Length: 202
Ligand SMILES: [Zn+2]
Image 1: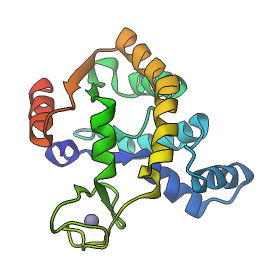
Image 2: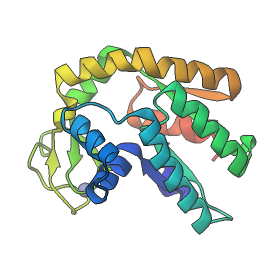
Image 3: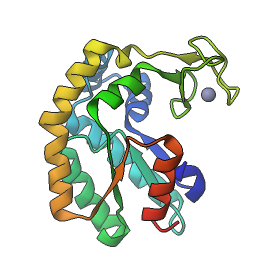
């Protein structure tokens, strides 16, 4: 929604990672590919390098009005520190906005169990309903809706544990060093959107 509204690039880390492993075959990348196929997350330093490279590319292309919505990283303290340092040098601290969508764990679990993702564009995300089920055509007409293995219960638990261990420290760092806007994620999608739009003064 934000990317569309602002005309910014939507950077989805997992997608950047997947694209990278399709076209690079060095030892390190092959190791990341193996981990990814097991349902593990990409390593922080590897992920950061790819996000950084993409960021440079985007800002070189669009120097005036450009911007990036980061989705999926920074996920660890390492990535948060590196990305904030890098962006501060590139665009200035005042141009970095951080949004924390705070959601109850049970609600998150409930939503992920009902989540469908387009097999062609991972930014097309829907909730299962009467006419949207696995195998339905994507309402944006470019693919088929699927349930991702990554959204299964066992992986959810592993990810949640990783979140508490690795992402919470990143969030604490961001809260100390930058302004973090907290949005209540337990509300319906529309209300979350409105709160973000209002908080960013858009
Ligand atoms: Zn789609």
